[in-house]
Image 1 (tube, rainbow, N blue to C red):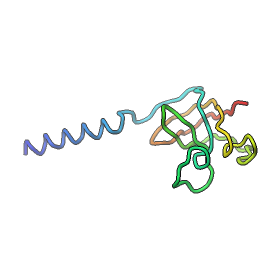
Image 2 (cartoon, rainbow, N blue to C red; image 1 turned 120 degrees about the horizontal axis):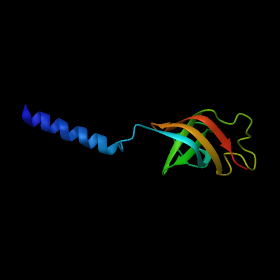
Image 3 (cartoon, rainbow, N blue to C red; image 1 turned 30 degrees about the vertical axis):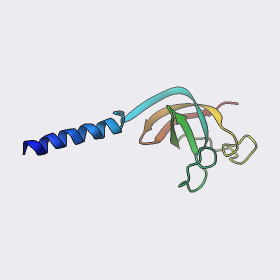
Image 4 (cartoon, helix red, strand yellow; image 1 turned 30 degrees about the horizontal axis):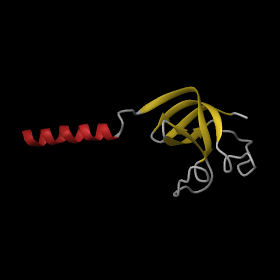
Length: 105
């Protein structure tokens, strides 16, 4: 029984180390790079165009407050260029739950 407990404790520590120890992070008015997750960040399993940001070396899919009047395939659209944006929200599990998403010129 003691060997089982030791094995379980080691397994739990490995899982915590692999997860980075951060469950969620709050972003407040952070300037990030933003573009289409499929077209510009090359996510092969994506099905259609969607907003994504780069944060601490990871790509996060944006949910919540996103630009509604943005022309995706325009010359300055999210599918053609990476842009800077100011965002606020909660980053969790590969997603940004945005309360603010403001594209910069």
